[in-house]
Image (tube, rainbow, N blue to C red; front, side, top):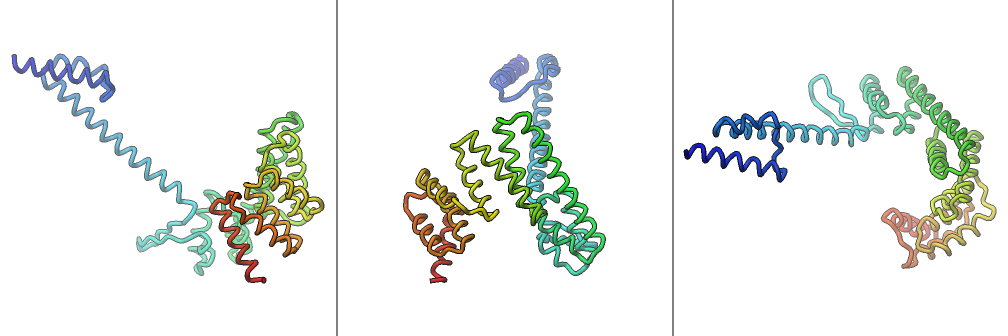
Length: 297
């Protein structure tokens, strides 16, 4: 009787745990739990324990995989024949004298994510290593073709949906990435800067309160060398949003483009105002220009 009483108490405890969600009972195990005194519940508890161990192991493996994925593009692990492992930053891999090792390191990482290493690809395309140079050049051409196809496809969609803000935003971001990639220059770059200028102005017509579009439009004009009227617009924006650091950064970009030290000094004084919100990047930016001003005084 004591054994049966203990068995019933154990079954009741498992049922309560199941209802409140502490454990999840497999329905196929219920007859085993109920019909085999004491041993049935113990068999089930052992099974639960084994399942929890498996889950914990899987979580650990998933965590390790996620950590590896987070860092695999930042550095390259190369295992030498003597089983000694070395970790080499990608930029330093370009300086390795042994062509076989350099080629192995660079081509391995660039096969995975060449878009993130366009600068290194450009350097590799000028390498004396014929195989590496060919691969880098081919990769850059592939990336360039992909950008141009994506932009062309979006331009067709823009004709069908001229007032689609989300599409316009994606088009702007793609153009900016392509322009900043370093793969285009000269007249070709100016063509795409012109496309970006038109897209940003269209965005401002669709959404006049979009701050980022205002600042990017002005910065793009400065980069194109079209500076007429830009200062007035920047001043208007600073007066409209005096706390926004991007206005002062664009203003400084204009001063730098025009090589106007008086304008630069004015921007620094404005940006030092206590009401201007500066991020860490903004504080570093202001400190840099204050140092430049002090050295040139």
